[in-house]
Image (cartoon, rainbow, N blue to C red):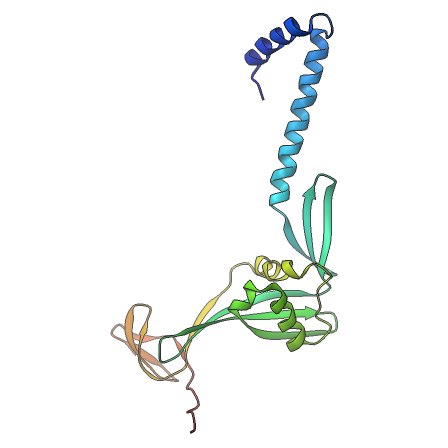
Length: 203
C-alpha cells in the first residue's frame, strides 16, 4: 500500500486521467476500500497457512481460517499423545525409533509402540492404530493425512530414552560405556541407560 505522499501523487495522476468522472472524495473512498480488502486477504493467507489442531471433548479437530471464515473439521472422535520417544540400538549400531503413544477413546484407553517411520505414512499410520488398538480408533473420511501431524502437535515436549538390545561395550553419548541390565559404567562413573538382552537366534 502507498504512504500518504505517494497516494497524493497517484491521486493527482488519476484526476488528470479521469477528469471530472471521479471526485477526490470518491478516489479516497475507493483507495481505503482497497486497503481494507488487501489487509483482510493478507490476514486470511497467514491464518490459512497456520491451521492448528485442537483436542476437544469429542476428539481431535482441525481448525483453519479460509476465505469463507473459520472452518473446523473433525479428525477423530478420540485423542492421542506421544508420551515417550524410544531409540533402540542393536549390537550392529542400527537404531530403531519407537514413538510410545497413548490413545484415548471414551470406551477404551491403550498405549501403543508405533514405529517412527509410520509418522511419514498417513494411511499406514491410521491402519496401524486401528489394527492394534481396536476398530473404535478410526479417522473421519479424508482426514487420514492429518492424523500423524495432529498427534505430534498435541504431544508437546516429548521425553526421550535410549535402550540397548545387547550387553557389553558400546558408544553412549560420545563415550565408551559398559552396559549391564542393572547399571552401566563409563569413565565418568555410573550412567543411566536401559539395556535389554536379545533372545539368541536358534539354527
